Length: 390
Image (cartoon, rainbow, N blue to C red; front, top):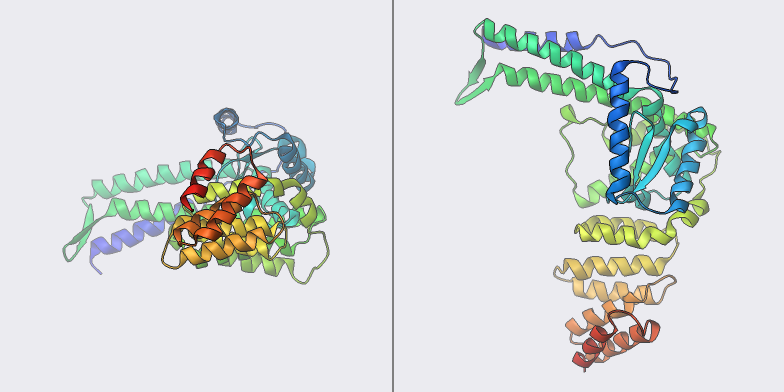
């Protein structure tokens, strides 16, 4: 190893060692920010909360918001007065907590959790970010890392060492230190995530929920990631632990404890009316594989199977790959024969039957749609389809 390589490795080690001096843990008293840096974070969060509320992304439904707030408060316990839980219309699995207690729960997450206990696991995780002031700790660590990084880079340039070569490739030592610093900060974030997982599990157990539900959240997400071959961040720079890792340690923490409630019916009562529009939002982004995986998993739960078969039909109709026409026909027929199918299942069945040159069956499907919603906005269009299928 030449001297420049040695310098790069040594400086990287120095950077990691310098970053390892962390601020002492703060007691989670959350009445108000207690230092100027935290006041700044709260002000930014306040403006962000206002922007979300005014953007139209916040789901304007008092009943759903009240339900999420109730579950959040049961999990948060003494921190309840400081948090506000908002449903936000956004596909994909995500929830986030701002330093001032403003929590977003994306509708894509609500589509993917199966019961109230799984929801409580996610909300408990987010509450712990708030309770332990993770945003402030991250800000302070980032500031210290940035200051040390500048000092290291200044020393490199002052000493005349700007990089090293390996064949035709030249690597900047500044790039090396940036990579190491980025990896350290991601690891620091992973520590926060693991702490929030552990303590969030404790909160949900204390609130009376079944602890095994926490691992199930990640088990379902892993299944979706693997089935749809979703990209994952490089391990060094992943700010969250891998889903498989989280699933394993949460399962270990829950152990054999079978106590606590799942709250499946309560969750369905609060969310089932919205499920179709959430699936539609995912389809609008052409998340065909993901909608298929989610719908097939929800079918195992048994609620409104006709609706779920309908959206499977929509996956195949819109994706339109070889073989999808027959799959769409089968899915729509399954929808119509099951409980909870929307009237549109008849219309879409007519469209795919028409494409398959099954005109008599297409006419019957179009007529069935008009019989169910004769005054629909698209009735004239469907009558035109009916004439075309003749």
